[in-house]
Image 1 (cartoon, rainbow, N blue to C red):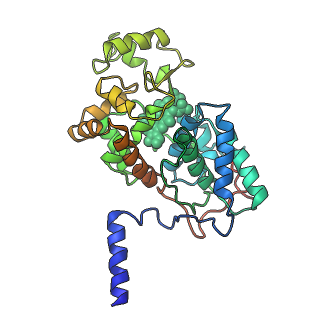
Image 2 (tube, rainbow, N blue to C red; image 1 turned 90 degrees about the vertical axis):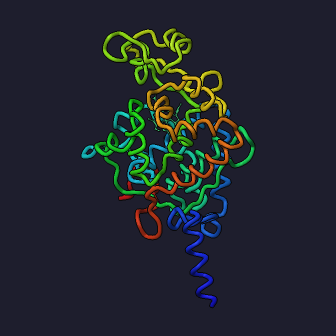
Image 3 (tube, rainbow, N blue to C red; image 1 turned 180 degrees about the vertical axis):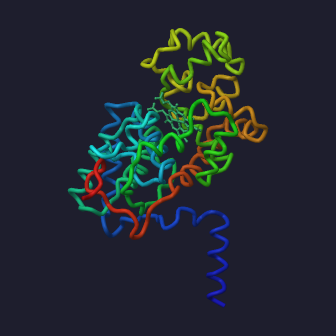
Amino acid sequence: MKTAFIFACVVVLAVVGVCQGGDLRKNFYRTSCPSAEAIVKKITQRLLASNPGLPAALLRLHFHDCFVRGCDASVLIGSTANSKAEKDALPNLSLEGFDVIDEIKTEVENKCARKVSCADILALAARDAVSFQFQKPMWEVLTGRRDGKVSLSSEVLANIPSPFFNFSTLLTSFQSKGLTVHDLVVLSGAHTIGDGHCNLFSNRLYNFTGKGDQDPSLDPTYAAFLKTKCQSLSDRSTTVGMDPGSSTSFDASYFVNLKQKKGLFQSDAALLTDRISNKIVGELQKSTDFFKEFAQSMKRMGAIGVLTGNSGEIRKKCGVINS
Ligand code: HEM
């Protein structure tokens, strides 16, 4: 009877998704390194004071980690003479925040050597940085990830979605990671903070179909504003806030702007081109709804392909595989 009950619970929990994340757990470091999570939070918050772009940088770093070989910190590994790492692939050249993870790792190692993975540090730091604005954790980060031993630049393009993707290529990308159309829309809301480089969207301003035209799905007033920032197709250095008017605040205004045809990338605008996705955009315009959904989707993203148990390793330095 008791066994049947436990079995039923496991089935129910699995169905509602509570068991997602493989062997990730709450408080994984309770006995092995009780201060780990507090150290991550303390250093992240200290560094935030001098770097307001840190929440965006760490959130994107975590996403780019999870989409290539799972959340295993493979994005943090440096290239060697024999192998070009993920970090040096084109979509990753503008990633930032590596130094922050290294600084946290050094202090965590001093406290408890070889216990806490770089993959967990990254997941926790991203959460803590975004949450600082709210003075409370915005999503739960389960822990117990281990670090991967492989990082190949050649795997990045096939796994990181491009800002030029349309709806169907975006969805295929997310589905290949076990995520849904709902996760795709909700997680795109991460673009409520941070910046984008001109060359990743200026075709929409100057040459959308090869005839010197503008993307008709972009609001003309917003396009005129963007043209004052990005003055040519070849500008690769200027950046623009992705969520016009509110790109340092984590809120639901990304969805409000998106509905007004003010999404920066084609991949943002693409979310309006599918009936179901467009409906979800409409439902996420209230911050309470967005925050609740974002918390759930981040938990799913943070569980993609994780290494647990005896797989992988606990790296000594986040940029280098243990020898
Ligand atoms: C849906 C597919 C996605 C595409 C095509 C995409 C594409 C991009 C691009 C092109 C940039 C600007 C990079 C640059 O200019 O150097 C960017 C920035 C950013 N992305 Fe995404 N992204 C996607 C999903 C996500 C997800 C799922 C997250 C996190 C959950 C995320 C978080 C961010 C953040 C926070 C930034 C700003 C980074 C900063 O300012 O440092 N993105 N994204």
